[in-house]
Figure (cartoon, rainbow, N blue to C red):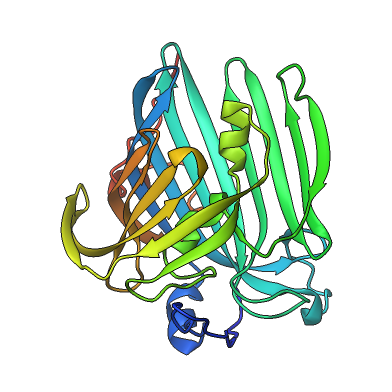
Length: 307
């Protein structure tokens, strides 16, 4: 569990004054639990929409930026660590005889510490497993640049390493964190911002395109709407991202705290709608019989035997 920290962020033209991660924030997010949200998922693959599930896990951790990992060494100086919001997004869907299992992790700083600013992406990683093989990629955001490493079973993509310039932008893989107001830039209602956006590692691996910075336009609506999803009826506001080649993201975000994303849609046909959400210490629920918690999230436990 992360200790309480505070930070101060500068407001910019058309941007909201970024909220401080103070006591109210840590009373909720520093309780030693994770927010686990389950979604109905539609994912386009091989020319057809595939029905599956997504699970988004949001949890605060203490991060060691120099190592790019959760800090668990009790002797590591506090000056070498920073509190982060970690997102693990797991997407599972069938494609005929075999499943796709995708996982994206994003780490966003919650304070100005250890040489990094608050609300900055520090690391994103992505992996995919299916019957043809597996891939892994990660991007480390450092002052000297973005260090990219990837491994793939595809010919021509096997083992790659490169560095991109650091542009102080946002990672596409961290947009679910940004939509909740936890990553820069924090927009005021009705505001728009132009930012460099690091292309998603998920897209790079599945569509076989390079990772690079793309210009993106971020918007936040003024209008509050009511939306119905499997989890119920919510008052939401809309945040959107427009990128090159007419690629877009749309996020419907719960107006009330903790500002969960109740629906997110990508222009290629990917869509996810909230089924249920719980705050649980999921890492302790790994014993026999704890599969029952999945039912509380609207998910079906894995059967005893799978094809």
